[in-house]
Length: 125
Image (cartoon, rainbow, N blue to C red; front, side, top):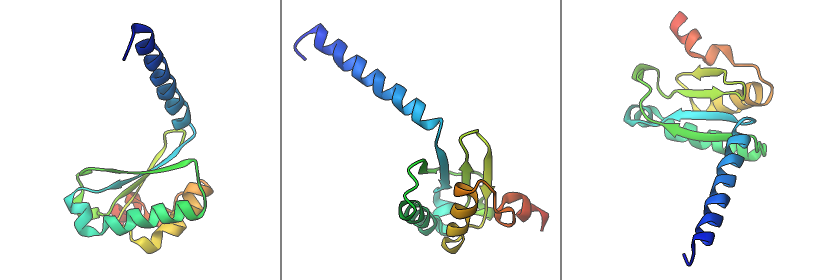
């Protein structure tokens, strides 16, 4: 850095990027996969890859896939949360890669949760 003015320009550019990210997140659907040791052992890694492949195949630019640590219910792993732009969260349990296309098609694209894959359905058994 050569001057205070240059530092100020960098600060402004960084703040603009942060604000853009905040605005963009308002329209995003988030897919969050539990990737702690228990999730990975139960098969979360192939599930994550299946979500990334399906979302890329469908060119869904409004969807992000991320991972999180332990969710605390190891017996239900692999677990996936789908969080819609309005903040509603649906938790899917015992997710297998072959379940992913249906979750993406019905929930992410069409806004209807796949009830029989959710935590509520698992707890009713």
